[in-house]
Amino acid sequence: MSFDPDRPYNDLPPLPPQGVPLETVPVLKQVVAASRELAELKGAGNVIPNQHILLSGVVLQEARLSSEIENIVTTNDELYQASADDLFSASPHTKEVLRYQQALWGGFEKLRERPLSTNLFIELVEIIKGRGMGIRRLPGTKLTGNDGRIVYTPPEGEERLRALLGNLEQFVHDDESGLDPLIRLAVMHYQFEAIHPFGDGNGRTGRVINILYLVERGLLELPVLYLSRYIIRNKPDYYEGLRRVTEEQAWEDWILFMLRGIEEMARETRELIRQIADLMVETGEIARIKAPKAYSKDLIELIFEQPYCKIRFLEERGLAKRQTASTYLKAFAGVGLLRPVKAGREVYYINDRLLRVLAG
Image (tube, rainbow, N blue to C red):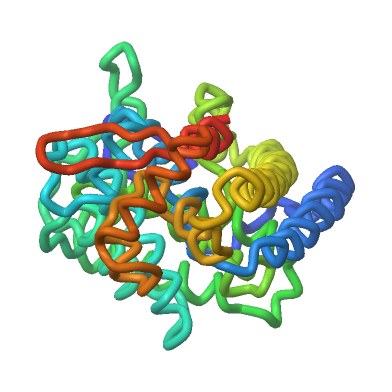
């Protein structure tokens, strides 16, 4: 089947791929390695019982990095300040990153009620873009490389796109196929990107779906895999892999690329969780010794859940009334656990050590 990047790829084959072995010996060996690391990561999440600490920290970094792949760049300072303050005048890029986080968290909550589906994909992209989207209807979508040349023209026609998405849904949930879930994830990710069902936000939506799929299959308890960091590190290889599947049906190389990413990032995310847990213990010990009147387990958890902490957060959590809350945060700042920063009428107490850990 010939491929012309200038013409809509309306002959995109449905799944599963035909005539191409997916479960080769190298792939199956890599599945074992990736599955082992994922299992370790799944267990590591229990090290920090307060899930919101991981969801507010790790997920926000995943949101930032996934958006950076699409050249939507923001700083950690602006991102965490905007996350902590609804009234903060954030840049459009920062708002997009926060919407990605909302999509990932919202999708995670929706999985409790229903499986991955075309309708859920639409809901995710609409959260990410902050507006109604729907399946792409108009022709003319073309993807270009860094040199401006057209590298891919996705299929066109809403009916065709919906049929391809319906086939993708069936493939994702076809447990009778016997295909390992991680191999299925790699194939699913290529196919979603090739269908390119939306006018914008396809890359970020596809990466949200990856993480939600791992949760849906029970391979993760929480959506805390830094897969976007791997893609950024290997961006040329990522796009080359997608291209070679389209033009050469090079499935083995693509699947191996994705499986290595899952293995590598599961290991790194597990290490990140360990560092956060160790830092929480260390912070608690310092507070207990140097600021005993302000110390409480709940306050330690709060400054890790909200790296840009405010007096209001302590009030809302029922930890203290305003004056006492101010005293507690000043006490933590006095022993070097937090850094106070005044911005307008607001004072933020910043957990710099946690932010350094999250930034890697």
